[in-house]
Image (cartoon, rainbow, N blue to C red):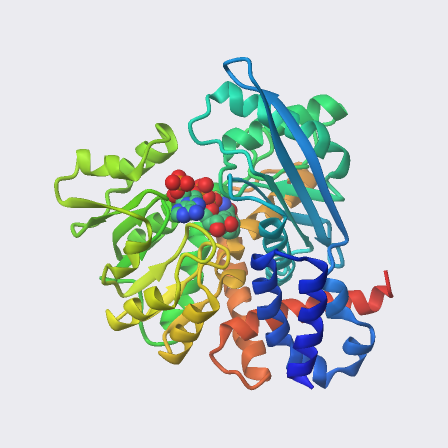
Length: 446
Ligand code: NDP
């Protein structure tokens, strides 16, 4: 029944969503993981729970016109996919990157349903973004784009409806401009976006949350094998929000982070990365990672982002983008003695790469579990906004750590319960699925 069931669900997905390969990939992985569970619980099959889950509740696509600094009119496309609200308001980030199209937003939104369920907080799944490229744009251009984007999006979102946040290309600056426009259009100061600035509704630790959470959960996976971070050589791809704060926490726990990248290339510093330099390049100057070598003679820069996986390491934390580790790169990591992989990015490993990691029996923590700390802390931001209270850094950090432990326990527990001990891919998919599936069953066919 299992294989046939996966084929039936995937036939539906591919026929309804032609050409959306990333979405097909994400849907197949979940369908394969949960098919044995659905086989054991016929009421889930009868109520067509998975068939309903793969169909977004609502998809919004819109024109985003704006004027650049030369006075030229530019037109981008905006998206918001409100995927599933069975356990809470839609929640998920906005991605601004030229590669964005409906299939990327749908894969991200679909993953978000299960990730959000794992966080133990009451949030549904959604995602959005645009094919706008913030790179090389002036602050004024970014502001005009964000205002135009929000001029349409505002009518679809709300603190109890849909609460977007950041993702690739959307950080504090973009959230600020979008929040300002939402406030102006609605005349309300509402917790409608997360990742807001401290002092106007933001939560401490939100900036660090995804990277910190990633390191907290990999700590658990290492501990299961009698290992810790001390003295470990770590390779992290990307040099954005997730990569920077994963580096910071791994270093605090005694690891030596030796490589970081951006979409142009990667740096290796065998003395260990000096994070202040990276933060200055990326957060202050919005520069390129190659500039690191201008002030660190111990470091070497290589063109091309794929090569980073040839750098020998004990722990790899892919934190750039989807499908950045293919089967060959995964084999290289394993051959070089890597013992653990934690996915900071969403779906950074191809199915072939995951196979390689699982065959090699290394500790593999998939994105739905590994990067859940960001959205979990966004949920904590929503709670603080509703209570009109601010928690201290230590309070939020302790809650984040507790949530990451709960995510790990649920994924590991579900894997064991369904005869897949140690398989956190299956475990995270099953645990997230069951929480949402039971809510959908209780709420009837809607
Ligand atoms: P940022 O925009 O802050 O940084 C992204 C980094 O990845 C940059 O270094 C960027 O390089 C690199 N990158 C982006 N696209 C590509 C590409 N196609 N090829 C190679 N490198 C690329 O984003 P985040 O750090 O926020 O996000 C990174 C990943 O983490 C994404 O997959 C995101 O979905 C995921 N994530 C983020 C969360 C968050 O809270 N921010 C929460 C959960 C998951 P360049 O500057 O050259 O583009």
